[in-house]
Image (cartoon, rainbow, N blue to C red; front, side, top):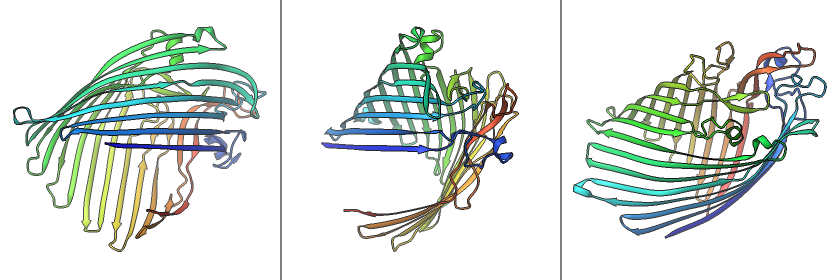
Length: 442
């Protein structure tokens, strides 16, 4: 029997720009690290506690239980549209979220050999409750003007599940599973009675995988699964016909091989269909549900042992994403890649050079705006001697001017037309940074 308990606490406050308009940087009004509204920023804190319990009833039976709780607060001052909606006082808003969340995840696992086949059966239950108190207010220089929303929500989910992992032969493996999700939403608004109400929704989900092989160091596999995302409880009260748990369906077909010595390679073709896509709304900094979408693409991955002490790993994913209406899914990546070269030397030194890449992608449904891609390199080195370990890391090694977040929406600077200007708004990525530390293990 194993029992572990751990907790953590985090607190931070900051002043920093949100998304700044590309045209303001291009015209020299601000630098890429500047701000149109210098009051943007906020503060947050989070306290966590986790309990894990593992009890092995026998060689073939295992019970695991995970219990957790979190207290979280956030007060965020943002100005997405600047002077579009309120030309005199500006569009600064304050978003506040104070919540307690807790949950339970319990699972029973049993291994058996029916008719000579290896079978692992699992069953369990997951439960989670969130109690957010959400406030949206109009502000000027962080001073309250008026509350737009003041809502308390109690959201609970109950999720029983079963899973079966069957290997009837040494060249065939079948994994199946089913899960039920029941969500309850209870919304109470201090400002808008139309938001008061409660909703209960439920849906089943299934998953299945088939693996054939290995045949000559090669495996073939196929995966299918359904899932969902949960929409905002406030939207469900206002729009009773809105699906609370829109369906997602995913398909995957691929091959893994080790035909070449010291080389692993895999290729996967995948598809993902969403019944409802969430798209950013620049007016209040939230997301809104849109129509169904379809994604498909390829993923290639490899790992090579170049020398006994030198390895290379990397993957590339290509994606085509569109709404069923034909429009582009904003900000859906078209090409992503990452790679890593690691050297582990016998005298305790390990170094790694990592690369991550995101290609250009459409920022709007009409494909008229482009979110610029980037390629970043990070270098790390670690040295360990007995109980002492030291490390140094250089992030953004080549000091690329990259953009961490990019969104296309309409905003208005002083002196611009009342209707505003459609533009790319971005958060600058971090410049070259050097990190270091020392750890003592005992």
